Each structure stands twice: as C-alpha cells, then as structure tokens.
Image (cartoon, rainbow, N blue to C red; front, top):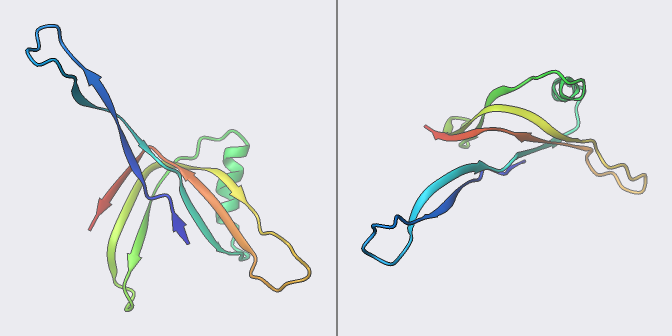
Length: 118
C-alpha cells in the first residue's frame, strides 16, 4: 500500500507601492511534499529496518527512490521519483492473539522533492 504522493506550493501575497491595481499579486512560495507512506506484509527482509536504524544512529542516509504503478501485465505505467528521502517513521505490526490478520509493517519517507515521470 502506498500513500502520500502529494505536493503543495504556498501562495505568497505581494504588492509593490507602484502597482496601479489595488489588489495583491499571488507569487509562488515554498514547495512542500507530504511524507510517502508505504505498508507491506511483514517479511524476514530487514532492509527497511536497517535503513531506519541508520537514521536512529545519527547516520545521514538519504536515498532517491521511486514508486511505480504497474498494469495487469506488470508493465510500468506511471513513476513517481522522490529525492533525498529518509525514513522518518517506522511502525511494526500490531499483534492480536484473537485474530489471524496479516502482520503489517509501515514506514514514512520524508523527502525533499517529488516528480512524476513516465
């Protein structure tokens, strides 16, 4: 499961004293990107935990990556590339002895830029 493929640009009101119209101009401000949330069934693969462990230990471990949407034949359709990402949240599976739900691992990746590619 993937979520958080979201971008937002702040609007900055601006007006010069020599402007003839008595209204504000709208300039583009800072761009902000929501953290990407990824969830998967828990596996023995510890790559995501090891990446997060680097962050916990104070090691700068920023990575570029991509979220790829595939069709029924597993051919790439769309690609969202993120840049300078790092795991800012890791969540292990919830345990409930009264059910047999799949154990889900979840991470959030904070990043500095998101681009939609082909």
